[in-house]
Every structure is written in C-alpha cells, then in structure tokens.
Length: 317
Ligand code: NAP
Image (cartoon, rainbow, N blue to C red; front, side):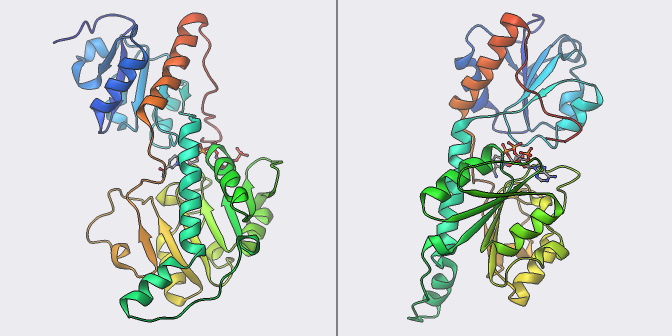
C-alpha cells in the first residue's frame, strides 16, 4: 500500500476509465489534499473517506465508501451516480464549468453549420460525382430549437445568435434569455418541435426525459428538419428516429451519445446514410479547468463547511 490511506482527510477518486489524467489534474489543483485512487483503498479504509470525486463510476465502485459526507462529480450528467448517492441521502455536486459550456456551444455551432450548409448532401453528391448546387438560406431564416436551456443550452444559444440564427428553446422553468423564444410544458415542446429547422437536444437524462423524443414527438418535427443529440442516447427513441429518416420526413441526425457506449460495431447506425455518428465528443471536459473548479469547491467546504448547489434529487438533475 503506497499511500497514507488511513488519513481521515483523504479524498477518493472513483472513475470508470481515463483515471491518471484526472488524478494528475486534481492533485495539481489541490496540493494540500490527498487524492487517492479507488483501487488503492482497502474496504475498511474506504469507509473512513468523507469526500469522493467521481467520473461516472459504477454503483458498485461507490458503494464501498460508507462514510461519505458528499460527492463531487466531474461529469455534468449525473444520471448514473445520482440514484446511488440519493438512496443514501449523500449530497451530490455536479460539474459546472464555463469552459465545458463554451466547448458545447462550439460543437452546437459547428454541427448546425454542417447541417445548415448541406454538408451531408454535398458529401453524398461528391461520392456520385454530381455537380448540383442546392438553394442557400441565410441563417436569419433558419430556426434552431434547443431542448434544454441550462448551462449547455444557454452557451449554445449565445453562439447561434451571434452567428445569426433564429433560436427557440424549451426548459422546465420559465426562462427569459435575450433573443431566445423560450417555451415550457408539453405545449411549448410541441411549438419548438414544429417551428425548428434543427433540434438540438441538451437535456439531462431523467425519468421525465427518457425517450422524450418518441415516435409521436418526432412526428411533430417539420418535414426535412434535422436532429442533433448531444445529451444522452436514451432521450431519443432511436428506432423511431431511423423510421423518420428512412421515410424522408427528417433529413439527417447527428448523434454524439447512445444508449450503449461505445456504440457496438454491429449497430446499423454506423452506416446509416442519414446519420452522423460521433464518439461522445461534443464537449470533452478539460481536466485542468474542471479540477480547479472542484478544488475551489473543496476548499470552501474545508473552510466553512458550505457545499456548492447540489443536484436536486426530485428533479433528477
Ligand atoms: P443543466 O444546466 O441542468 O440544464 C438542463 C436543462 O434541461 C435546463 O434548462 C432544464 O430546465 C432542462 N430540463 C430538464 N428536465 C426537463 C424537463 N423534464 N422538461 C423540460 N426541460 C427540462 O444541465 P447542462 O449542464 O446544460 O447539461 C445538460 C446535459 O448535457 C447533461 O445532463 C449531460 O447529459 C449532457 N452533456 C453532454 C456532454 C457531451 O459531451 N455529449 C457534455 C456535457 C453535458 P430548467 O432550466 O428549467 O431547470
């Protein structure tokens, strides 16, 4: 055992993969803390740990820490860890990092331009040696519907508005965002789906958003509209989406997230001509930036025992 694990102040780092980059960044941001990898704790030592920093751990990995006071996720989406900590009434803090939101805003703009400027169609034409200009529409005539107007959705709205697009959006609570036609409720969702030329999904995965975009709601989209899912795979019923693409009612889908990741090699989505598959890369977390935010939250807790805002268990995000 290479570490002084027994120390009460040790912070456990618990992650599925990509561990060393996180350990290095967290240790650099918190030189006075003792960040120890999950695998370096014996069970009886794990029971003394009060703070865990987690990167999408399995429930089994987390359950051995029986004395936790709180958990900090370095992932923005917390659907896997929330039920585990909620069952034990342990507060959960998720990552809110302006750099992550900026990166997501960039991805939303990039893939909006990809779709708006007809890149899938021109790529197909090139393969067939077809020289055929398509009609151009200025961004001021193109409406982007953002499902979710939180950290990611608001950053996306800023980039889209600056690029000249019309932006509408949907959230749980009423929002006032300059330049955004914001909606709530089932009726608001229908309005966004019916007016958007492209819908970008930036919702957390919760019991309410699971398969939110089912066959019935996908059928509300404008004929020829496109869909971008940068949130979680399970928010979209992929079979229903493929049916709409095959029927020609939807033009294209950009999917960054899937119910099973990595997307299995045998999945038909890989070679669907109207689907662009991305390997969960729309907003990769910057370890250094995220570690600084976690460090500030830990320092404040050490100083005065106050936690940053925690995930709302009832809402699920
Ligand atoms: P957030 O700040 O919590 O925002 C979530 C938004 O969704 C809020 O506007 C919220 O409404 C809305 N919402 C939630 N449930 C709803 C419902 N049932 N009906 C209507 N609106 C609902 O979360 P975020 O930081 O923007 O992140 C959103 C998601 O993006 C994460 O949960 C994660 O899954 C995903 N993500 C993906 C990547 C990637 O690389 N692919 C990277 C980062 C994040 P209110 O504002 O009214 O609460």
